[in-house]
Length: 205
Ligand SMILES: Cc1cc2nc3c(=O)[nH]c(=O)nc-3n(C[C@H](O)[C@H](O)[C@H](O)COP(=O)(O)O)c2cc1C
Image (cartoon, rainbow, N blue to C red; front, side):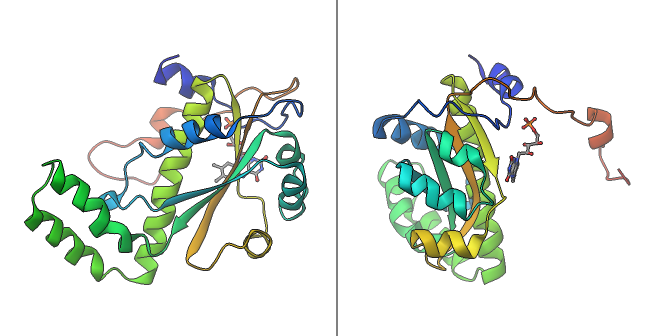
């Protein structure tokens, strides 16, 4: 399946086959695809908590307004953005310097540029990066014949408490992944391209 087909076929599934599971290696593979996404300065703010066990799915469902798909999907990812992601930047850049992609002066400049990031900007950046990785994960799932559903319907404070997530992390979304069951809606209506696209300058869309 190519990227166009995966994008066209992907739906936000509401019904998952509860009898299917994914191995830890399958889950690692999905997250590996997710991490091909771009991020500001290549900070890679995304982090993933994979909820796979029945009792943990029930705990997550309980703080996500009872969304049944969390219990039925093979895995639901809690996708996090690291608000202090820039702290890993020197370590990340060392790899790019070692492989000759950038030189040490550029690496030092990048670290300096990110050191003054405000908490608000760091929050936006973490959510942006985690969201890009989330989309990559959903496209990868589709390409592997799996269904997915992003979710923001949860109590963030309760999810953090229940799963021991510190305030260092912002929750970008949950993503359920598994085999689709019967009865899912087709892809929803999309606004026509000319209603969402302007050339050269913005307009009142
Ligand atoms: C950030 C985000 C949060 C969402 N939250 C939920 C959710 O909590 N529960 C749900 O059933 N669907 C959720 N959705 C799915 C949307 O309803 C769905 O993507 C939209 O209706 C378009 O449907 P389609 O992806 O099947 O075309 C969410 C989607 C996004 C992007």
